[in-house]
Image (cartoon, rainbow over all chains, first blue to last red):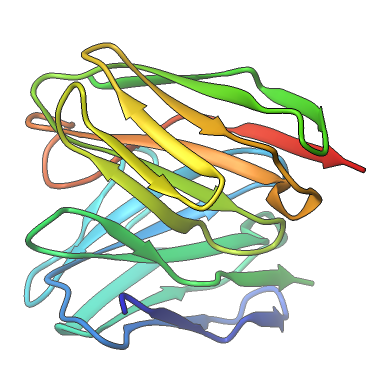
Length: 115
Length: 113
């Protein structure tokens, strides 16, 4: 149980284009999902909290117009990196939180490379 | 503001050499303390949740314990496949708003033959 998927696992895009990453909770409903970014050999950096049916809450320093988050259903949240630049290249990981226990279950991550 | 400090940053063990990882925390009302394992290039894998001081949980060679100030992840007779980064996180009543977790920077464990 508690499986979270992410798609795609790897993506390469050109500078200036947009990329969408999907995060799905496969066997439970998640009113709250989270998006993280991780640089090599560093810990997770929370980017935003995604609540089903409402606007995402972004952490300080994260541009909400650049990183668009949509949480349209209890099992799906998407992160769109708009007008991507090489500095956006990173490992993006989502998590889905269970309502009863607050446990977060993570997806396998998406490696984004912007050329 | 909730804070989590993990030590050591890195740990090298011989196969079969038991040890413990430490997670010290300060939190305004603990709702839960979580342990995760992360392999390179993958998302963290959930291991344990601890809710109150004195609680212990076990899974194979791993045992997590909790006090009011810290948690330990004990690894008994580790094997090379236990090599990974172990992350600790807390969920506090006032954790910056919402239900987000505060993560430590992790302990990178390497178990050698």
